[in-house]
Image 1 (cartoon, rainbow, N blue to C red):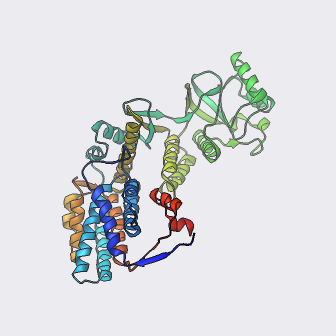
Image 2: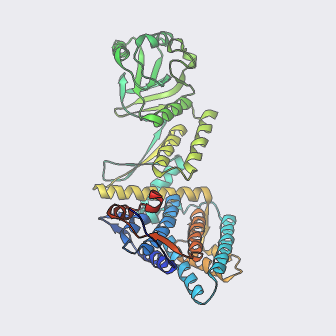
Image 3: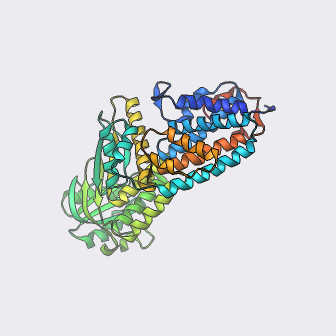
Length: 464
């Protein structure tokens, strides 16, 4: 349908929307949305929107800024909402007194730069009080200790649990989900590792390699083992003629290819495809990888290789760059962290427990937020709240921003990264509000558009 475009001096309505969201997010306790506790500003914002499109626009702008902070730092929703409300009220009072909004925006930008530079220069490494800071998010000291202890070992992965209690498990080696399709469960030492990109269907293609390996232990990780190859391998293993264990590579598509490449780097070999670097019949034992121990359980297999090689270091660096990429979504980041844990040969896994599905889901989100917050503190350091008293204050905007920042936090130590994000995102939001002249919205929404708007979809960007 044809849309009607409406213009209005919408700064007042935008402010009402921003205040509406901040009032809810700054309340003590959690926010219950549709029967489940929510940590997302976007979820809360979707329930606060009404029929006034200008009011809704203010809610969305605030939710977008606060959500970015929460996703990057793992927490800070309430603190960001408090800072937003304080700065917005300050700028409204100044504007009402006759000061130019453009001048206010300029002063706020300068104050934000001064405070950000101070935080970067005065951040200190995380102390032993890390458990106390994490406990503020998990609401449980034992869970907080799991996050800290797991992070000290390696890259922590958070998974769902079938049990009521939350627990930490540390796996030494690279874990491959899935059972064996050839060979019996158990543990073997000093195994050769063959990694194949394609399914193995012909026994004759790997028979020359089996002759060369003789009585050595051989572990095969392939896209699949089918037909006569599967039948004859199992038959010879049962008759104790060969010592082979094989499994199908877990995952699909690109994730499976990445896992095969990771396993090849971890065991210091290459991924064979039957053509490069040679045909399967020409593969020699010297071209295979080495695993110190291969442990096959019912639903997973763990291989322990040599983690001290340059290939592993280069792959970990490449994966960490993808994790830091803002375009990488949350789910992909979790999978990338699992790959890092596997390549490091030590995978601490926290299983989030709960006696109901909703409770387990909430526990997992809490642990993930606490983990993200702890990682930012380890990487960027912390700043003591009392140190904010030493900020060089030259303007009224700098003084008010510093005081508002101190009032937003209850803990005495704060993640420096969280402070920087809040300064950048919240000050950017207020500057944008100050420099807004007119707000333009479409008033010709149909029923389908309204449903999409309630779900948080930006109709104007979607429909062009």
